[in-house]
Image (cartoon, rainbow, N blue to C red; front, side, top):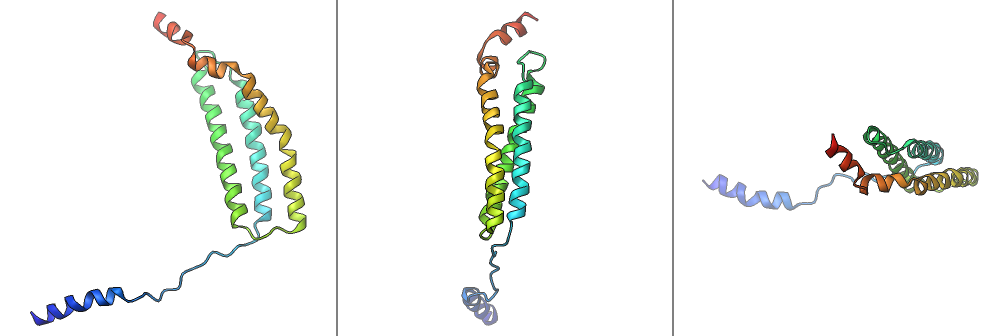
Length: 142
């Protein structure tokens, strides 16, 4: 009985002692090339989203597959943006050449992004297809 009493009284003290395991620190590394390649992936994602939006016609038989194509392209675009942001935060300072390359590539994305936004705003069928009750009337008539 005395042994268990002694162990139970020493156990909290043993657990209260600081652990001496070293903590690993993530150090910044040179990820400029990876950021640059992810920007290319972002560019292809923007182009894919624009193509999916332009292909969306809002017809009853194609609403689901075309909507899924738009959602898939949008998800890919979001993932690319998050990955670029993560890589840029984890990277060390970029060299001058890497900075110029990244800025030039980002500047070249302005036109595709504007095209994608124009396609999205021009597609009245996005909002009208889902908010319009015509498809409900068509389904009820079947």
